[in-house]
Image (cartoon, rainbow, N blue to C red; front, side, top):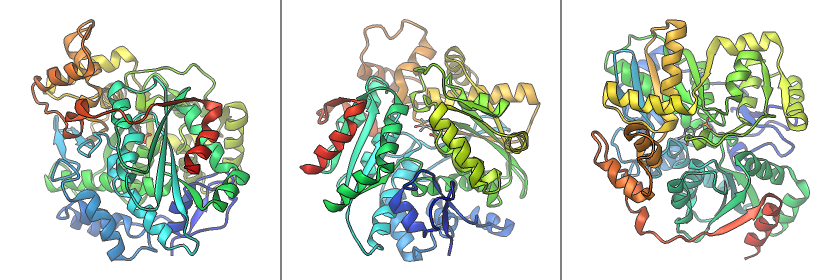
Length: 500
Ligand SMILES: *Cc1c(COP(=O)(O)O)cnc(C)c1O
């Protein structure tokens, strides 16, 4: 059975379902599989004939080996069938040129790639909990930079035996993102705006997880905390699937030959999406380079270039808010993997990060990082240029997150001359960030006096766009959540919510 171990060597190995139920290692550290399953070239070829759910079965089963095949099916079917995704292929891959292909990961109910994981993860979590002897009500705490919140709310709302509390940075998300969250119904959903940025939200949530006394008190009241952020393995594992999916679509279309390596460009924040791509490569998917694209919060670009991680810098609000992050949690898993499970190093680096806001990896590690990852960033003007350029050259409309990826990819090609076939992960539907998209296409000042719904309707008039169904009825929905709090009030708020 696959054992899940802590990146900091501070927890005994546990089963997949325990790792998912617990979310993160209580004393700090993240769960990772002790061994990574391998997909043979033959299996890979066979996948070209599979639909999304069958592909997911094949990839996820060896990781979640304390789930029976039937149990897994019962998780995957309702997530990816039932018209839950507005596209029969779930994540269609379209071609902009012979070498650049776009995987649209935004056809789920909340219009961002997080649906791919968060539509299925609640099923993993409730099934995992059901396997445990001491069943408690699960309380999901979520810190969101905008998209995770809504995706998690949609995934968990009205799921029996769970409550979900979402924290987002007040004024730090787009108006549409905020409305998506604050209009969520369901009798187990709570949404709170925090005066601070995403890192403040994430740190508060991590502190609550790590507070043994607090967790003890909750346990006595019959509650147990878990996480729907990508620190939870159950969130990460469904994301590995679509890397295989994209590859096998290209194989089926004969864009690539069996065994041919491809690149993936990943607009990156918390390093979850790109890490899933790394695991796919480790499982045997022919990956040449993973291109890590950041916005002006370019901690990762600097880190991959210098080996020095420094979060002590000005936090920028950008048009790609889901990537406005200075602490990329899943980097810890990546470093653990490429240092060959060196828990000593990881613990030291992560302690440095927590205490000083910086850490420095050794040269050997830096070299290993550079073999698989190439990193770059796009400034705000460049992101806007990229939206316009993609539209002018390809009649393709992309959201600002995807546009960051597009710009970084073009820059990468110019500098490296690499002609490898590349898949760009499109992480959000353009309508979700409609004002940036319209401004990029129509020019600065165009938005003056227009509210978000006028903007949405104007977007619909553009070529090649249709309003995402999950956004269409937003205008009519009443706002149900209005709580705003200070950072230091978060813990008290959780207590109060659970007293009700
Ligand atoms: C969350 C998100 C990202 C960043 O993904 P990570 O897994 O956190 O790196 C990028 N784009 C969009 C639209 C997102 O919602």
